[in-house]
Image (cartoon, rainbow over all chains, first blue to last red; front, top):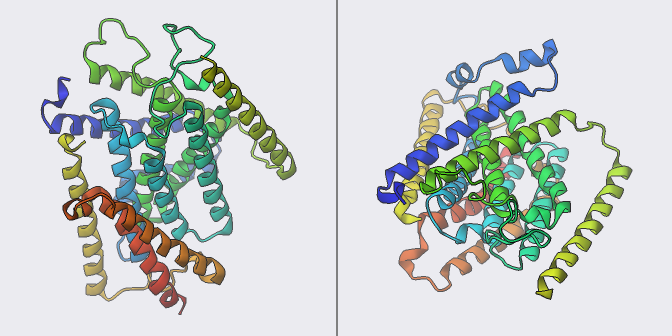
Length: 300
Length: 106
């Protein structure tokens, strides 16, 4: 490990990476935006930097500011710890289901304290429920509480490219994962629009949503999308942290583009009866899929 | 993770957050302008059952967090920055739900 010789280099690299990811999320959104109508354009036209400069503390509610700052700090810690752990360290605590869920539950609870509409409460509770179920499903198929361990795909050879992608074992898990990422990205875009209100807590909400999205993508890359070492760029593998950074960035950008396109092309009308049937079918298929994987694993 | 400077980072960001809150308080007291705070309404006001259940959940959470943190730990390790990141929000949410909300209803 070349970069871990001093404390500051990994931290500076990680912060640069986070800023780069936040900017790239904005750029991706700009390129794949749904509507180019005049109405929508005016919503986005107000530039972030001028809005941040116009933020007024007098307009900000102290309660909201305190809640937003608490959430901002805990998510920042969560995200920094997973990025540092992935790129420069080898701490397995950050992949424990309990650890992840504690922080996610806390962050969603703080969102819940700020909600004013009942629909928002429903969204938050749905998100948390799907998050818990997804993490538990990953844990069950990996047969471990530490979901960061690497497993092999049962129907691929050992040294085949993509053989570490757990998602090929349980393809039905892709549906809740996509739901989580789409929900998080939508909330990020929504909070970006709300900077226009010019209160300080909205700015920290926006940053927290961005960090949460980056955290979730990194977590899923590590747990089901093959980790950070599988794309072999010949000749550069020996510089491990930098190789991992390139690997993470490529995967992050691809996943973000896919998620943004999904938001653009997904149907907006929600038929409750139909979605209930789909949810039941997906849950059933997921359970069958998991049982099958566990059966095959225990055969060996 | 400690060797990677994460503790320093937590102290830095939390310190800046506390400074920001203090500054906001200072500005509000100087101009004597608390307009944005009083009309603040939480949704839990309108649902008393929700508020009661929230209080129960939060007090349970405090007990569970404290016992898990106390377990197998010496007193020096109790107030590490990571633990504080969990304890402080939980205790503060309890205070908000219990004390501040009835005030904001007036």
